[in-house]
Length: 80
Image 1 (cartoon, helix red, strand yellow):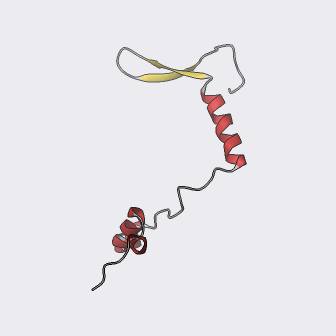
Image 2 (cartoon, helix red, strand yellow):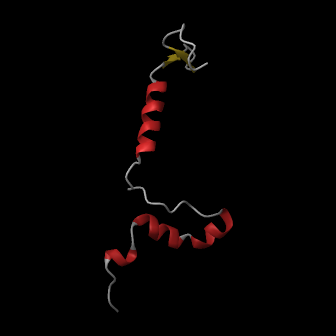
Image 3 (cartoon, one colour):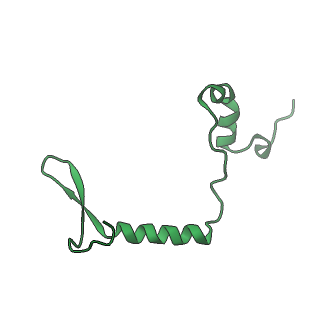
């Protein structure tokens, strides 16, 4: 019996998907898209916008350990 090459077996996620086929019939399919694809220009613009929006906020931690988010500039009403 010949041993199959690593390329024939696929990567770890593909082997996992084959091994859990019956479970997926019950719990539904998993996403099988590639993770190594190039980012589109539209996604880059969206990412830059989201990063800029997140820079407008800061996280405050209360003495009891809970946290909340407040604007860095209280006078800025652009996102509210």
